[in-house]
Image (cartoon, rainbow, N blue to C red; front, side):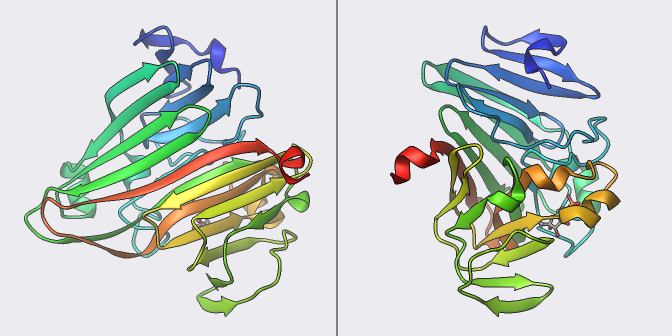
Length: 294
Ligand code: TA6
């Protein structure tokens, strides 16, 4: 996708523009430090490309951009739960229209803040009042923070994930570090000190990850560093061939060029009393792989 050619809806500054991408409105950032696209539908980051680098965030070529279905790729906001604990899968925040709260910019980059509050629609799914703010800092690195504030008069209990799809050159050639040895897969708790192999579908909740997770990509000659905070797990997902074929919004070979590393609270274990808040974050950066290890 050529983000320079999107039809413009309104201009916020010479670097920040609201554009139309098929059925959704997106905030387009074109800055000397990095370019980015953020969909107001879902509060969903679709693109992040520091200057001089390959795009870091993967978006499916067949993603549904009509604004009626969750978008395949980018950074879906899973909230107020992760996975299929309840319906809809991964919560409702990724299917809601978010508001642009404010944006700020300087020579170092652009900060965009989006908000989502409870509504009649959200109360029909989850009967609590809340305020969500998504702070997105676009610079050499991408910093994403999801701030949940309990505006209800009862304690709320929830989970969340920043379900990041990362762009890689070839799934069979990458390796991952920092995920730890303990994970849940197919409802089983597994401990393994073996290196992670990418040769089949993988869907794991790592329960004791390091703060820093890295994806080493020798073909793109880069190391993606993911620094998570406020999470109790890191999720690793690649659907592989068969599942990709069965997903209408994924190319058959889409699995080859993506891997999900998610900053997650997978089990609805966050409790917030009225007026309390919680911050879940992820910071993503790219370094030259070869030069750093030599
Ligand atoms: O985070 C991994 C996962 O929960 C997988 O189980 C897989 O289903 C994936 O998310 C995508 O979920 P989605 O609802 O977007 O199809």
